[in-house]
Structure formats: structure tokens, C-alpha cells
Image (tube, rainbow, N blue to C red; front, side, top):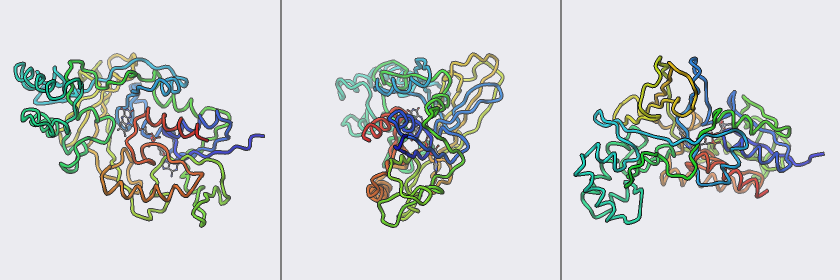
Length: 383
Ligand SMILES: Cc1cc2nc3c(=O)[nH]c(=O)nc-3n(C[C@H](O)[C@H](O)[C@H](O)COP(=O)(O)OP(=O)(O)OC[C@H]3O[C@@H](n4cnc5c(N)ncnc54)[C@H](O)[C@@H]3O)c2cc1C
């Protein structure tokens, strides 16, 4: 009889990966998910016109890790996908991150050539240079370019509260903070960039489809899990649980917000179904100067679905701050104060040997899909 028991809390990509890896290591795995469905940040829906949309924002699989790719591919086929993101700037379509083509569209050929020469001279051998490095350079024209990126792309409407931190935290915006000296319009530079043929939900459903895995939806795990007074033991239905407990939600709630609530960002998404083949020229269009919509995603570019005469747009509103589970947490608000607060909770968590924090919400780090899986592989292989 199997005596190895494990619990997984939250079934986003981190929890689903961990559950599967635990099951394959001989554990019987009990999973709790607060929502009526698995998926977390990668949840998808089918629109009435049949188009599959990512409910929380565009998410692309990209990695340099062959190990991660081999793992995720076991749960569904992928097709190669080069993500393209454009900025809507003064009625012009500008590829992001900014590259040689973008500089020509914005500044004209002569100025673009001059900027590219200055970039190569100031940053020899570097392909992508971040806005903060441009600002720290001693070249006035490059400093201006860095400021241009901040003011016209990484505006407050995306996720900057003040001028002190302008590298966006959300992985899906990260590349917007760079200028690329080449003329390739690809958003990511990773060696592997791909999308699941049947979507991420199908991948995650296949991950938890294992005889050793039980899934309880609509279940707040904290109604079953509690902390013992000894400050080292975790109770499952009131009984000490010795096996690994993988925890992926925000950690402040587990400790009853003892030091205060951790800050996250959340966003609202709405959809428009349109009767045309394609509405925009690319998968993602950034409209950072708009008050209501920061990003428009045309999902059909990312799903490879063969549906003619119909398309769906996803419109994202500017991010707002959330805490105590108000709104779906998209990403941690990382700054000196929040990191100090997080480390107090992380120290408390360390006292519980069976507790393992996993993923971007529990670890308060902006992990990508690939990094979430890599962390799950590393954690479970340590048991
Ligand atoms: C808008 C957006 C765009 C992104 N774009 C990309 C991209 O292009 N490429 C990329 O690689 N990454 C991207 N990311 C990051 C990537 O999506 C995340 O790193 C990953 O999906 C996080 O998975 P997770 O399982 O760690 O967390 P989550 O997906 O947040 O899962 C946590 C789960 O815990 C559940 N839960 C919460 N509280 C409880 C409770 N008390 N009891 C039980 N269950 C609970 C939640 O319902 C949720 O299902 C993006 C993220 C966002 C938000």
C-alpha cells in the first residue's frame, strides 16, 4: 500500500506540475483549488465564436530549458510560435521591444542609424539593452532614448507607480523595457518559443489526470489546512500532516495576515467578438496612452485555430493594486517595503518543514511559465 502522501494547494501551472511530479514519484496527492476550475493565471475560455482566449492576459511559453520543454510536451503537442507585440504610437505600428525597424518608424532613417551606431559603441556585443542601462550611459542621445521608452511604453498605466522603478514586473511586459540592435521583430529571444495546440488548460488537465491525484475544486485549502500551536506542524483536518505540502497562493493569508497584507497587482479583462477574419496586424498591440485599455490581444494569432470570418479581441484595463485576495493576484508588487514584508512571512514558513512554497504568488517573484515548472521540478526532486 502507498504510504507516501502529499498535498498541493492551488492548481495553476506550478501546482499542476508539482502534483504530477509527486504522483510519478510514488506519492498519493490530494489537491485543493479554490476556484471552480484549475488553471490559475493560465485559465482559458472558449468564446461563443469558438475562439480560445486566455482569460487573464496573453501568455506565451518561452524557455531556454530543454528539460522544461520535454516535461511540458508530455502533456500535449506544441507548435512553434514567434510572439509579435506592437506599440501603437502616433498612429504608427512600432515593433516591441524597440529594434532597428522601430527606430526607423519613430525617428526616421538617419536618426535611427545614428542611434544604432551609438548603441553599438556604448554597448559592444550586447543585443538587447534595457532602458535603465540607457539612462545610466554617458551618451545624451541614449539617455533620451531610455526616457522615451519609459515615457511612451512603460507608462504608469502599465504598472509603474512612480519613476523609481521602471522595469515592469510582469514577465509579459519585461521585453518592453529594452531596445534591440537587430531588426528581428520577435518579442522573446529564448531558444524555444511555442504554444500548446489545444491550449494551456488541456496541458494542465492532462497533468492532473493521474490515478494517484485527487482534485477538490471550489475548496479553500485553508478550510482543511491549519497551523498547529507548536509553530512547526501543519494540520490536515486537525491531524498533523507529515508529507510535503506544496503551497502556491499568497502566503500572508496562511499566517492570518499577521504582519499585514502583501501587495499584488490585478487587472480587468473584457472581450469583443468581431465578424471578420483578423482585426489587428499582430497578436498583441500595446496602447499605453489610452486610459481604459493598455493592451489588445487578438487570440487567434496565438491559437492556430482555423476559424474564418470571426475573431475575438481581449482588452486589458490598467493594473490596479490588490491585497487580501481582492481580485485575482496577477503579479507581486516588488519593492523594498514589500520584499521586507514578504521575507517576514518567508521566515515564518521556514519553521514548517513540510511546507514548500511554489510559484509567482507564493514566492513573490515574477516567474514565467517555464520558471514555475523548473521550480516545481527542482522542489519535488529534492524529496
Ligand atoms: C497577465 C499575465 C501574463 C503573463 N504572460 C506570461 C507569458 O507570456 N509567458 C510566461 O512564461 N509567463 C507569463 N505570465 C506568468 C505565468 O502565467 C505565471 O508565472 C504562472 O501562470 C503562475 O502559475 P502559478 O501556478 O504559480 O500561480 P497561479 O496561476 O496564480 O495559481 C495559483 C492557484 O491557487 C489558487 N488558490 C488561491 N488561493 C487558494 C486557496 N486558499 N485554496 C486553494 N486554492 C487557492 C488560485 O485559484 C490559482 O488557481 C503571465 C502572467 C500574467 C498574470
